[in-house]
Image 1: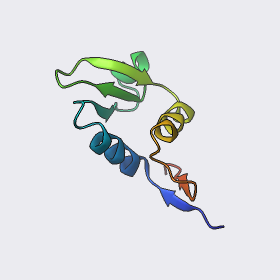
Image 2: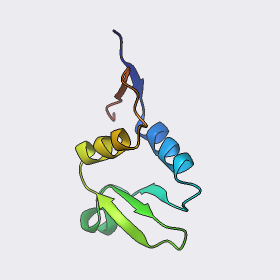
Image 3: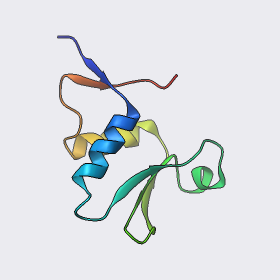
Length: 81
C-alpha cells in the first residue's frame, strides 16, 4: 500500500481546526529561538496566549497527531527539507 505524505503544516492546520471550539491552537517556534529551547519546537496555546504544553521532538508531535486521529493509516509525515 502506498503511503501518502502529509506535511507538518497540514497536520498543524488539522489540529487547529479540530480544537478551534476549545480555543486551543498549535504554534511553531522558530529554530534556535529562546522559546524553542525552553518550551519546544511546537506549543499549544489557549485563547489568551498561555502555553498549555510544549513538544520538543518530532516523535512527540507525530504521537499527538495520532492521539487526536489526525493521521490516517495510509498517511506518513513528510520529512522537512
